[in-house]
Length: 144
Ligand code: CA2
Image 1 (cartoon, rainbow, N blue to C red):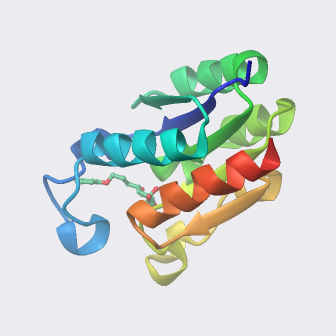
Image 2 (cartoon, rainbow, N blue to C red):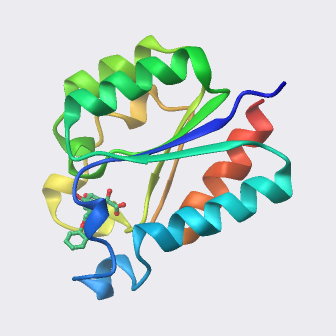
């Protein structure tokens, strides 16, 4: 049986839909999860969708994905720009990791221009809102 795609979300993404709609849109994380479940169902791939505000939890979930996922779609949130530990965890695991961002980080503050995850991700999709996630799922499904 096909292993699921794991979608992992980092800090503050649980607040989506409450503030900064001009940057992140009006959808909540639950809305994004629901759209991702629909797309994965259309593609015939099982999906696990998770969010944590804790770096160590995200690392543990990447390790779990190494055993239990076929691919990972990963929005590391602000840890994208700070975390050598997430870089190392992505580098350490076998399944392809697709980095996704809702906003166009390259067009925002300088401190968002660098990603520690991008060099070890299979690819990165940024700036397309919900479509970043849906395209991430399609890319992940094609890597299977
Ligand atoms: O654009 C993205 O997907 C980001 O990963 C979102 C992160 C940000 O730190 C990254 O640079 C880019 C932030 C996600 C949470 O943002 C909110 C903060 C307050 C209210 C609503 C959302």
